[in-house]
Image (cartoon, rainbow, N blue to C red; front, side):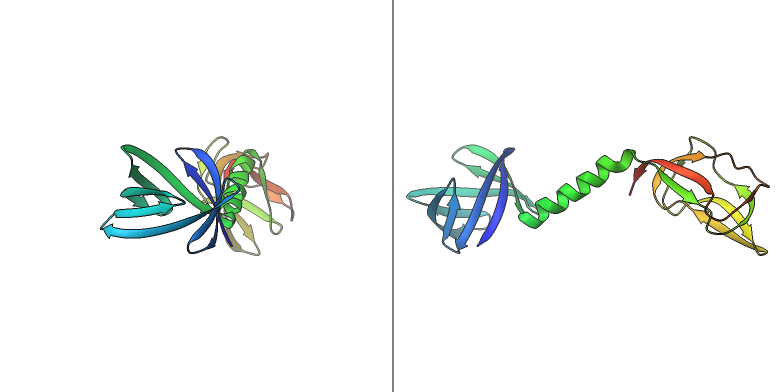
Length: 171
């Protein structure tokens, strides 16, 4: 059985397809037959009712349908898509957390490109750490707002010392 969550004009409704011609909606089983009449025009038999449906717009899993002189905005999602949306939403909610960026090795801070309060994009260099006569760019792993700790250019740092923080994370 394929289960879908639909939002019709913002109202949530669960629909399960038992097979191609039977659906469960509102705890009742209904026969459903869909016949394409013309491009974007369908005759839908739902239980004992018939509807002529005009597909006005389709974008991925979002549809704009005209039925009986009324426009319906319909979005269909599978259970997996709903769970994925919740995970993504949770990541966005957790974006207020702070990410500490620690020194991967002992070294000398040669150059700092950002200052407190600067915005940073993922992959953007924040500072250069010299270790064993090699210059290592330390990049931002996420978008956010930089908070430089107490390090300054010319400071020596040990391994695992916090170099900077990124606040208001956006992954």
